[in-house]
Image (cartoon, rainbow over all chains, first blue to last red; front, side, top):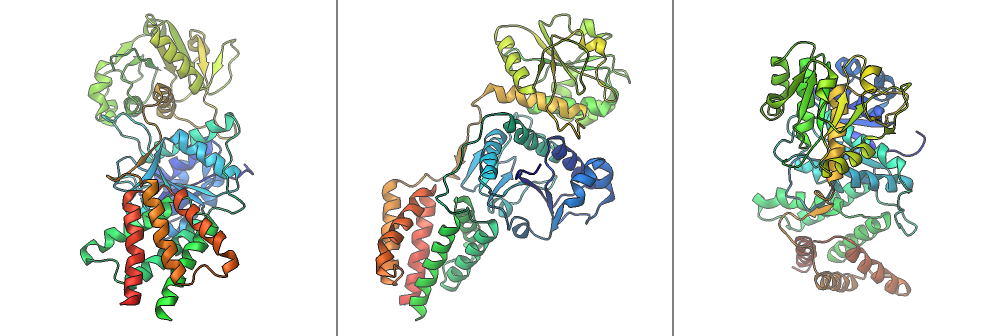
Length: 245
Length: 245
């Protein structure tokens, strides 16, 4: 597994057993790069280790644990969010098949990829989804959608592995630059939010939260390169400088 | 589900919970035709019903229960056996993908298809496998094969559904807005170019043309919606207004 492979990120997972089952599901299909955001029962978690059995040493022991999602995806160039229900966010929606095909192409181009999985009870918050580039939605029976956390992980890991059997993935044309990392996009979002706030853009106040969410979603949805991010920073800086100068 | 679909046959299942979980996994992907051979704890089984929740009425209540495998597959034209380990039996071995492709073709031709799943502990006996036309083997990590019964059912049911094809194509979730027209993107580019020019952004002059081209490319490369374009206009307007006000 020296090739680049996606990080599966469990966001605020609740039961240790499910963390262990997710680790097994990953390792079944050769994935070992797990991260967690704010696991409910702390970390390490003996129940997770017991359930993971052989996957404990190969997945859980190396799992990164983060306090908040932006830190967990800071070094990732492309982030998928798995969700069961529709969201009022403009974002590409892919099947696991298309998503893992895309992930293979990104990894082959040296780009770090993450897949987010939400807490058992309610799934990812809109605030989490807004930080992703695309949504993965498993095409389940609409009359009976009951996938649990480890099953969602299993299907994504299976698709990752299945794609390995096929033809070489198509390459992304990046014109000599890398995709921006999630950290860079986060900072870009901060910069705009701060300046727009100072300029009274988020008005009226009752709508401010929703406007900020939409703006975050706008940036993270775009396939922004490093060069784009530099340009967008530079534009804002120059306009503000001229204002204050 | 009036079309012919495969029967998933649990052969000598042990735990009621696993029968219930298998029923859920099937119904997640629209399959409802289950059979059982000699379930260890008899039938009906309240633990199976409790675990199946919504799938109890739609799958378990109609499940056929048989004393031995030959009776359970008597009316089937083609039988797949799922196995994790190699067998000393000459038999076609397929991935779930190829197997469900084949199953679709058979069902479309009006042929009854069955897929056998063995008991939790040891899987199918060679005697069971010998009654099948082909073997399904999930391409798991050879260093860590740990699929349980419900997971094997889930992956086969997922592949059945996936083969149905095109029912969940990649799409952009637009949250009630349209993609922006090229004209709208062009006007957005004009607006930014004009304001940035006035702010002295395109400097030095020898690089101005290239910078403008890159900026046009940035906007047009993004999948911008109408709402995005409005937001981006509004941001710029507000910052300039605050500056000049």
